[in-house]
Amino acid sequence: MIDQYCVIGNPIAHSKSPEIHPVFAAQTGQHLSYVRCLAPLDGFAATVRDLVAQGYKGANVTVPFKIEAVKVATRLTERAQAAGAVNTLSFVDGEIVGDNTDGPGLVADIVRNAGVALAGKRILLLGAGGAARGIMLPFLMERPASILVANRTVATAEALVANFAGQGIEVAACGFADITGPYDIVVNATSSSLAAEMPPVPASAFATGTLAVDIMYGNEPSPFMRFAAEHGADTRDGLGMLVEQAAEAFTIWRGVRPATVEVFNKLRTKK
Ligand code: ATR
Image 1 (cartoon, rainbow, N blue to C red):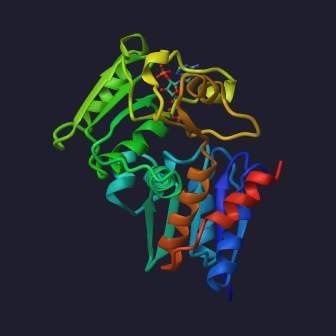
Image 2 (tube, rainbow, N blue to C red):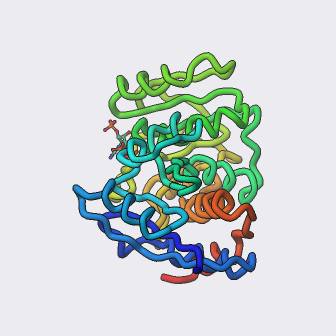
């Protein structure tokens, strides 16, 4: 039987993952199927158990189940534990292993695709929710000079930073009004772009040479990306991160790393 995978979410129709994994499979000569799986809002755990019973080999997890997936996993990787969220499940040897490839996907997009190293850089991370939390450990592992976490609710940023102190890298928290800059890399990990808003980040955060990345993606640049570009930054949206987190999940499942450029270009040109 062909190895089966899926992406579980609610809603799920919009997910691009079924457009990504089959291309990776064709490219690497792997035989697998990858489908969308709509789980009831109160039925995520039952859905996972059902997939395991059907012989599925793994699943991606998307909104709104990434936090619940932590509890459903019988084993967590260090980065899933640090993220407090799971986006990749592997069903192996009777275990449900939870991993999180979102942060590593962002790192891969910045380092490999944008060609910008994180080592020694001053980083400004906007937002302190689930997405920001998933980014912290993968960023720290790249040994930047510092990470400043700025959030509308400062206490949330302070609580986030407290979890990642003591790794020999300067990490600090502040409100948007306290940001001064410029920074080498600015990541918008708030959900502001979903509402076509932008976090109130000052222009002083950006300079020529700053890389500004919005983890959201769409057909148009987000207000954050437009503002950053107006103040000299190079900008990227989250499409590269999306494709790279999928490549990381594929690598975990299949033990072979796919090339990402083909899928990225296909998704970019498809409106
Ligand atoms: P996610 O899983 O996408 O991270 P989340 O955990 O709900 O979602 O976190 C959303 C983040 O976006 C938070 O940091 C939130 O700020 P608060 O903690 O102050 O609520 C931030 N956010 C959402 N909309 C925003 C906006 N318009 N401006 C600034 N920050 C915003």
